[in-house]
Image 1 (cartoon, one colour):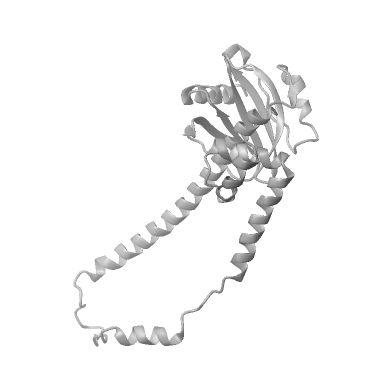
Image 2 (cartoon, one colour):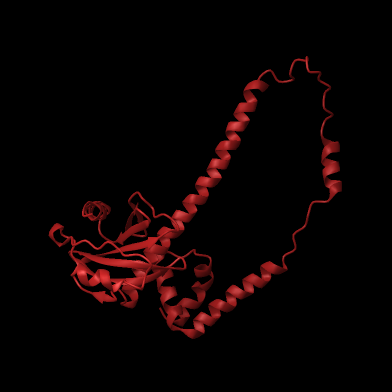
Amino acid sequence: MNCPDVRPLLSAHLDEELDVVNDAAVASHLENCPTCAAAALALADQRRRRQEKLTRHRAPAELAAQIRAALPPASRVTSAAVPWWPGWSRAVPLAAGMALALLAGFSWGGNRARANALAGELTAAHVRARLTGHVIDVASSDRHTVKPWFANKVDFAPFVPDLAAQGFPLAGGRLERLGGRTVATLVYSRRQHSIDLHVWSGGPAPVAAPVRRDGYALVGWRSGDLNYSAVSDVAPEELAAFASLFQAAR
């Protein structure tokens, strides 16, 4: 992408509304174009200042009084009186159940949003590496070369099995910055395709079930204190097979 292509997409890029391929292309351009990067920062700052100027208004007390006045007067019911609605005893647990379901829905929705955001970031990193040509920092099929390379670069020692006999040879590794943390990325091959296996400690858990996002397959798992997420354009069942072989190699 060049500057005329990127400028109209800046707003959608900041709102995370672009598809993975275009988002990665815009991000790659911004890393190498100070002019467009400055334009993106100016747009983000403009939005921030606009939000700071927004005034939040509290509902006046008179409004609450008007609402109460508009409601029908409550009937006087003694403790021995028959409830106005015979099904009230069933309604209370039903309402409570609905409230709990609603709260669970909000929580699940929040978790789903975080999972979707993480999946998008992992996929974008996979695409960006191919667009920029920065797929591998250390190129080697020898796990005894790749694993030590990560020493002093991440705060953990990634497990690097040799899966060449199973059809997934090691190609090397690189570092990524995802979600503000440094991630160890192992790169494996599958025929003419490549698989990025991102490894990080702590933070958000990866999407466990195999999913497809913008034409790319993702599968993740957790082992001990480390999270693993594999991304590739291979078929989802092949990526799931890779994940199973990787875990079985321990």
